[in-house]
Amino acid sequence: MPTKTFFNLPKDKQARLLEAARIEFSRTSLSEASIANIVKHAEIPRGSFYQYFEDKEDLFYYYFSCIKKDNKKMFLNAIKVHDGDFISAFEDYFVQTVDLLLEEKNQQFFKNMFLRMDYRASRKITPDLIKSRQEKHADMQKKFIQLIDMELLNIENEEESEMLMRLLMTIMFQTIGDGFSADLSKEQIIQNFNLKMKWIKNGVYRK
Amino acid sequence: MPTKTFFNLPKDKQARLLEAARIEFSRTSLSEASIANIVKHAEIPRGSFYQYFEDKEDLFYYYFSCIKKDNKKMFLNAIKVHDGDFISAFEDYFVQTVDLLLEEKNQQFFKNMFLRMDYRASRKITPDLIKSRQEKHADMQKKFIQLIDMELLNIENEEESEMLMRLLMTIMFQTIGDGFSADLSKEQIIQNFNLKMKWIKNGVYRK
DNA sequence: GCTAATTTATGACACGGTGTCATTTACGTT
DNA sequence: AACGTAAATGACACCGTGTCATAAATTAGC
Image (cartoon, rainbow over all chains, first blue to last red; front, side, top):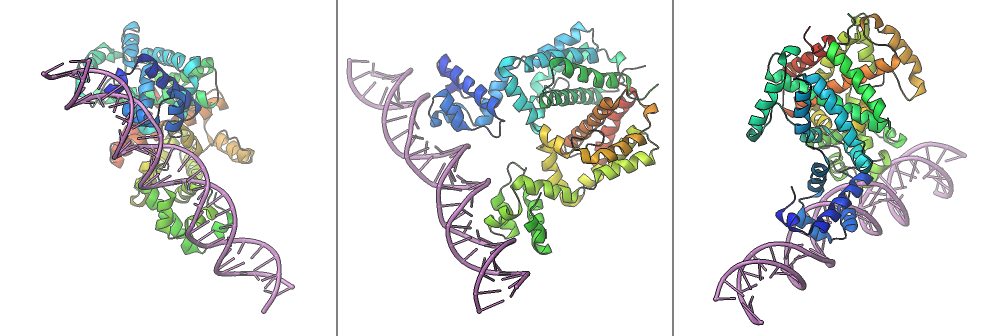
């Protein structure tokens, strides 16, 4: 998280920093991005950067949090719309997410992000809707689980729900990675996703 | 790939370099590893390193190629053993792979590798059994596809086989990542994998 | 309005990492 | 032994990070 000092900054200086983040993290991945470039774009001295952010990761994830929609709300809503059908809700959520990722302005940022994100980072940005290490979200998770129609699913317990959710997130990330990697259109990405979901829903074995 | 010069080196010098690679890449991830440490461990001058390898990635992937078994052969064999049942073969392949990854000597290396591997790197180490960019493997791929009993699967064409294979590899990587991340036992990892495979085989929807 | 205290801004710098290159050394051939 | 080629070597140029002493600005107290 940025420091208090950052949030006290005049809005236009904050904006310049975020725009510099967008440019640099669109140019290259987090690990290859340089603070030198960021401060040059933002037209602030190097020392100031460290007044506002811990390091470039700090800025990266802050920028990310600024441009992403609220995943949890999005998903929660999809569950309601689909009458507790977890799988249909996820398909809905996927389409909304792809829409966001392919928006002109941040497409390159997301491309670099997805193609260079490792296991740890993927955990960091995966919303934990079912099980969380933080207790403060316990109420939201209860609410969330109650909305799911468990009758529809071959799921025994909460452990397994968590695992299914993480499996679906992984499939989502892979499909998006493939999409960015091969420069697929939104339609192709969704089509690939649907095929995988067909397998998940009905199994790959022929009846 | 290492240079010709490297392969002309006395065996013990080669061995020292590989051991240095094991130590450094077990200490930390590829991106955080340093050539300074590697040459210190191997007791060779820094300049020599660049005589043998392009950069640390070059050594990393060479080391990896030395300690991994031949995935393709392993999988091909599993297909035969399981009479063309692609899914059973993959389950077999998974167990063999986990066995390799958890071997004492290289466990930490693999842990760093899996937890810090990004989408690109995962593509790099995924064996392309069905479709490959390189033409030279075309014969092996034909042989491979002929061995699969397509009657068992809900698969329309080669595109879809490729996609299924990649989906399974992704599930494998995720499960292994979870295992390393939470320090799970081999049995727990395999159990988690089996649950996911149950869904893949039969679908998650209750009948 | 003036001064002290606190907060913010700044860029030079120490440190550590990479890859190169001019030079030296070793080796095989005639 | 003399020559030519291949290999070895470490100093060095370059680039990036994060810190810190100092300067500037802002706020608080009177």
